[in-house]
Amino acid sequence: MKGVFPMKPGFPFITQKDSDRNHGDQSKTNRRDLLLKITALLFLVTPVAQAVPADEPPDFVPLGVYLSWELPGQCAAYTGIERWEDVGRRLDVCADNHVNLLWVTNMSEADLPRLIQECENRSLTLLVSLDTIEGKIKDRWPDEGIYFKQAVPRVVKLAGNSKALAGWVLSDEPGEEDLPHMETLRQMFREADPNRFSLVVSMWPQTPLVPKKTHLPVVCVDLYPFFGPNDVNGPHTAAASQGFFRQNARNMIEAIGEKNIAPWIMGQCFVEIWGPYRYEKNSHLIALPGAYLHWRCPTPAEMRWQVWETFRGQSKGVIFFQLAPIFKCAPETSENPAPDVPWKDILVKEAADAGPAALTTLDAKATPQLEEIGKAFQALGPFSQLILRWRATSETLAKADSPATLQCFVDPKTGQNYAVVVNDNLESSEQIRLHVGPGIIKVVDMVHNQNEIKLQEAAAGSDPTGTLDLKAGDGTILQLIRQE
Image (tube, rainbow, N blue to C red):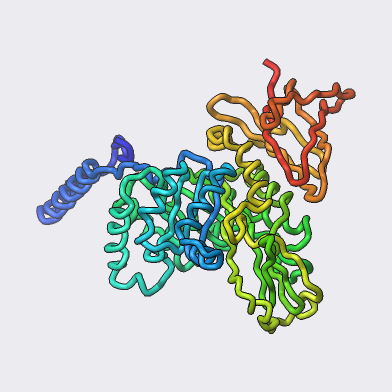
C-alpha cells in the first residue's frame, strides 16, 4: 500500500523485557507495548488520500486572454449595445485568433452559467474568479472560514458539470500572508469539485513562495515588462524589459523545481496612464502633457516575443492581460490633473501615443496585438502535447548567436530532442546563426513548413552551423535529429 512504511526486522513494537523489573514496571511496559501495537495497526489501516484530477496540472497548454468582467458592460454602454452582445463579440474575436482559454475575474455568480455556455459554444476553456470567492479578503475568514464553507459548494453546484469550466481562480495577486488561506481554499474546492483544479495569479515577488506554501497544481506569475519611456519605476529599454521577464520567469521555474506543477505566465497587453489622456478612434490611448505613462502597450513584435519567450523559458502556458479596454472613455479624462509624484521630470511633455488600450477595441475588434499573438497561438497549437511533455536539458545540442536565445528540450516519451529559439531583436528581422553539437545531423524547423535547415560542414574542432530567418521578436521550434 502506498504511503505505508514497511515493517523492518527489529522495529521496536515490543520493548525488550528486563528480568530485573518488578511486576508493576512489567505491567506498565505491557500497556505501553499494547498502545504501540494499536497505533501501528491504526496507521496501517488508515486510508491514504486518493489523487483526484484537482491535484494534477491540467492536460492542456493555455493560449489565453484575461478579462475583467466589469469591462464588457462599460464598453457596451459606450457603443450602445447590450452587455452580452459585447461579450459574444469579444469571444468570437478570440476564437477567430486561436485563443483557447478565457480567464475571467470580478465575475458575478449570476452570470456564470451563461458564460460557461458561451465558452462551450466556441470551444473555449474557462477559468473563473468569482467576486464572491476572492480569497484574500480578510473579512471572509473569521469562524474557521465558514463563509467559504458555504460559498464553495454553492458555486460548484451552480457551475454544473460542463467541461468548458476547467478550474477556479482563488485570488488575484494574493500577498504572502494570504497564501495559507489559498491552500485552505484549494482544499475546499478539491473536496467539493475534485475534477477541477485551482490556481491564483501572483506578482513576481510572491510567486516563488506559491509552490512552497501551497499545493496548487499551477503557478502563474504576471509579468508586465514594458514600462513608459524613462520610467524610474520599472524596465523601459528592450534589454531591461527582456531581462526582467526572463529573470522572474526563471525564479518561478526554480521555485517549482521537480514538483508536478505547471508554470504559466500572464503577459502584458495594456496601458496605464496617471493623469490626463484621451482615447483615439483607433483605440489608442494618448498620454497628454503632465501625464505619467506608467505602462505602454507592447508592440506586435513585443507581443510575439512574450509568447515565444514563455515557452523557451520552460513555462507551459501564456495568458494575456487584458482583453477589453480598461480605461473609462469619457471626454473629461483629458482634464484629469497631473499626478503629484516626485519624478516630475519624466512626466509627458508632448502628447504621446501609448498604443492600444487592450487586445480588443471598444467595439470588440481585434487590435494588431491580438492578431499577432493569434498567429503565434496558431503556430504553437499543434505542439501542445509535446510542450507539456518536454523537459529542459542541460546537454548542449544546439546554440544560437546573438541576438537570439535558445533552449534545448528532450521529450521523455520518445527521447527526441528539440529546441525553442527566439529572436531578441524587437525592431527588425534577423538571420539567426545556429551551431549544432556532436551527433546532430539534421535540424528541422517544425513551425515553418517542416523546412530542413541546411547545415554547413564545420572546420576542424568547430560545430556545424546553419541559418534561420526570424521576424522581430519571433520564434520557432526546432527538431534536433541525432545520428542513429
